Length: 72
Image 1 (cartoon, rainbow, N blue to C red):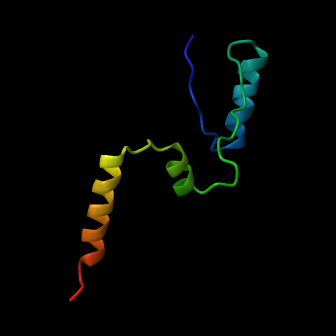
Image 2 (cartoon, rainbow, N blue to C red):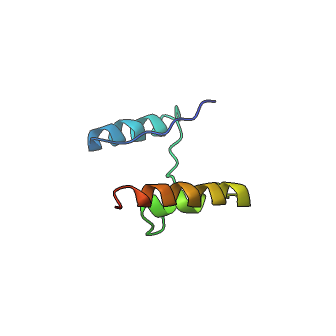
């Protein structure tokens, strides 16, 4: 068995898939939404890896360098 994720661009395509499911050639399963009123950026942050102390300090150092660009 193989599993695919399909994005329906035209309603006619869903009818074709439904017909295939009626013939028991495929099974249609609706995916649950993983987003719960959360922006893409927030979702990345929530699902992102956790940093150890050394990585966090390196981030702060890099952020400080970026913020200092353009200062006189």
